[in-house]
Length: 300
Image 1 (tube, rainbow, N blue to C red):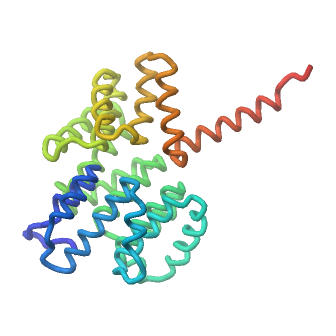
Image 2 (image 1 turned 120 degrees about the horizontal axis):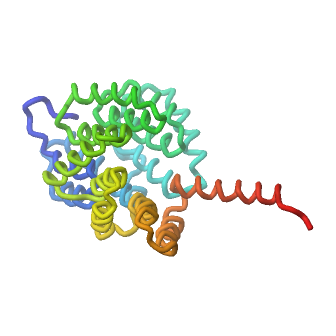
Image 3 (image 1 turned 120 degrees about the vertical axis):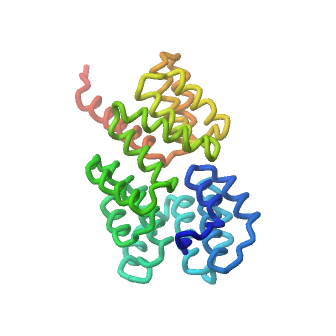
């Protein structure tokens, strides 16, 4: 469904808004669009529903996608179901494991992205990489790079970025991938990452995703006031975004703010995003500390 070289991609604004995290703008652009073909309409709907999922508006997707929907749309209902029903997650992962045996599913780009997203959420990067292996869509390459960074394999992430650059150097996902890699490498590369985020904001407007990325480069360089300005703007756009809350927690420590300030951000994160990876890890560490404290406590 990707446009051929030289063709105008009429979904460019929809896709780009989605990639940089401007989900409401992606929805607005998608709803205004009048697709000239059924193929473009289907692709538009994919990004429309993915944007709703990113906004945690799962009910829209669950209500509108059904068994009669195109095969390319149906995996998105699975993704919405996974995020909205914690008790069903094990069964959904098991079902995806079984579906990987069907080659038709692996030729469905939406299924590949959904399966990889769920595996990543389960911290199963190896399975995510396996399902992405034969999909050469630039978004799949981008997810490969993210998996490698989570695995601290910067060397493999560099190779993946090279493939993306050869495929489409100017693509927003390629630019973002370069910024993520620069952050992972640290040092002087942090400033390079900052420039990428700034260039994307100059072109397409700021977003929570871009502002958080920029704030990480500031924190890494010790530019805490600049980081606070970026995160304050991110909070104005979405005061309940988990990445913003987590970065605010870290920044508050660096700025030496009162402990209650950090605790407020932590409480909001724990209350609104109970399944966030940081919340799970923090809770596990607390339980482990309590277990060790009881084990070594002195009985009187």
